[in-house]
Image (cartoon, rainbow, N blue to C red; front, side, top):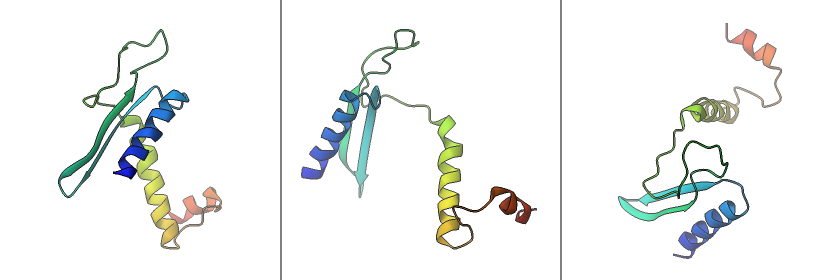
Length: 98
């Protein structure tokens, strides 16, 4: 339970520090919900199209993150397998993919 409180505090602090205007966290294990919490606002900029509090039902569009998340994961796996070095020259890597 201490970890749950720590996560909740961390998220609340992130909002308070301006790291993000708001966030939702859901942690499940073995079919049980351990944490489901929401903090902050949908937006802080006055010109934002939507305002209001973030709730546990808030849905975020992560479409723009899929390329970054999948690429990062694939690169990390290739590095772990020894197939790629993080400081490799991209031109040389690209040539081997042809």
